[in-house]
Length: 340
Image 1 (cartoon, rainbow, N blue to C red):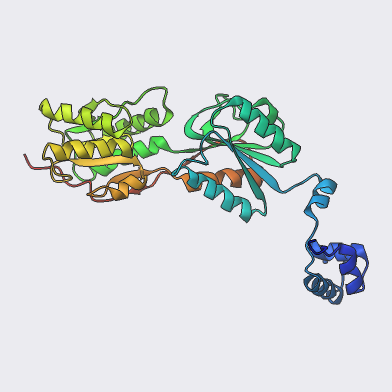
Image 2 (tube, one colour; image 1 turned 180 degrees about the vertical axis):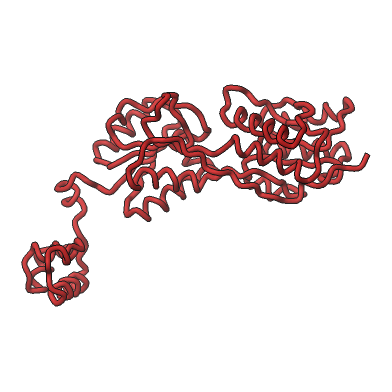
């Protein structure tokens, strides 16, 4: 049998004080309760000698506060890149003295309903509702009336009912354009990907790219349409090059597209960045693995998680959309325009 844990009464008896005095000292209320320094030291010494730990279960039953929060996601926890958002959430929860429960639904509404019910049964104090891809969501009815922050997703309501933490994709598009124009590129800049209006990241990135190029007095020379995967990008860029396209720079909508573009350029004997500069988004592990290393605008997964829990547990404030900056990771794939 495990050894019995020390009780608050045992601490009080060893320190020679009342149970309430011991409770006030261990709760940090010795000043407002006018407890002498000598009594405080005796209580702390007794607690250390007895290896006393407060009964959190009993405290939560008494106060209705469990100091726990739950993060509910579709596939965020199992994704190798977006999992950094979990790390940021965990770190922020620890910094606020809370435990974080994590539940993954894989997009199944039945599983989601069961998870939320289980967390509510465990009396968690608040919720982070998260999405793998930035998108619009409808907050589950069960969460209404509970503190909730949306992580990497948005609600469609005109006036937000919750804080919504998302990456600043619009500014990221501007940064991608500025990275090229600051290196001297003004012509022959092509987008690679398919910026579907239904995909938040693609729509916002394209809008930012156009704004950034317009600010420099230029615009996209064209779009090489493909799916957001290497094989599709390889085929599309290869076909464009074979048909005579001679781009000076490519803006790829994500790093997987950039991988396919790299392969197509190499097969066509185009050198990066001497012949063609390449910039991308996400800053996944691919960006550092590619040769030359890829300049990419980073998704701030860790900061998204940290900010979401920080808003949930920090001082109360009016619900708003917080766009987290996406930093530029400058590497060797961007150079000056070729002389032709």
